[in-house]
Length: 489
Image (cartoon, rainbow, N blue to C red):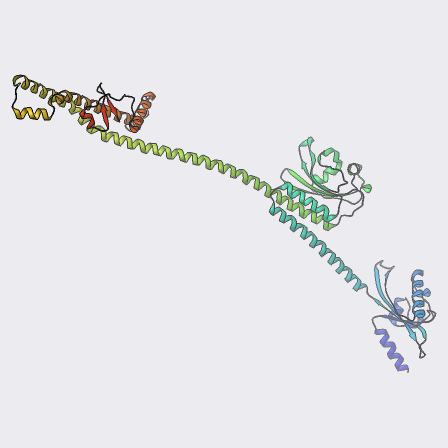
């Protein structure tokens, strides 16, 4: 029996739980070594005959233990509790898992209770860490979803005002706050001011957009200019009266302000506020707003780049139009140059044979007059020619030929002179024989151009002759007028 008791004691002392047993009156009948140590006793036998009121528990704890014992005995039912206690030595919370079951005798009657106590502090702390980690991961996932939505909106829209309005609305819904605002700080010396440009708010909240002097902010402006965040859980406990008065004038109870240097000369600010409730702004919320400010800076830079690209595109479009206009002018100038070269070449080629013809017309006229004079002498001295001569004279209509031949020579001379004038006009038009710039008669150039145009279209101001001769009929492209001038058909 003694060996069995020692073995039982050895087993109970090595069990990691605290073990104890009581009678029906909640008087301890025994315990293992761990329970004795937890109760502040030297040996397990020291607990025999004591109650919970004799141990170093508080009155509330002792009464709670006594009530649990009574329920187990009266109901003959086991009870399980996880109790939370705070150790006086280090002030830390500890948790214990307490189990109490009824003890029965051979007749099945309840004669006492058997209890076990296990320290589950490490497990509870691990569960708390896990719970906080899960909460942190959920919040982080929500923040990531919010940031992804904002990034997607920034990519889909290059309008900064639209992006800003959407962002503020998303922040207000996500943080469940009364108001979310975006402001610009304009540093203009004594005239520096803050301007609230956008805000998302509850319908019952007043509109606060507009400009506000830096002096109205009091000392609140100093940390914002230095890009320091402002986190106020309760305005009523703010020591600075300037801050307190400013925030109370706007109806703020709690306030979170995140400034950021978005442009070289401008500071952007996101502010979140509650009007009635006190709110302790978490580090996660601060990190979220700082990330959003970074995305807004990217969105603003993209909007600026887009506006600059639009301006550059307009400038390039204007440059392209000017280039096309210049190109058209160059093509027209090249055409005119080619036309001038062609006209000069044609004028040169026409000028030589025309000069040859015109130079020989005077000799043809003299020879014609000489032959006609000789023919007149033959007619005077031989008025009655031979029949073959008469027949030939009648066949060639000698009288008309004698009358028309001088006029024919004169018409040829007029035509050659006209061709010479046209050649001169072409040379004046092309100016190919001019090596340097010189003064010209603009009227002469205009007249030359008009002559070329009239010649090209086959029109002249000279009237139609009343009667054409047989010779004119043989020349279908021109005719002679009674004054020996040429009419081009």
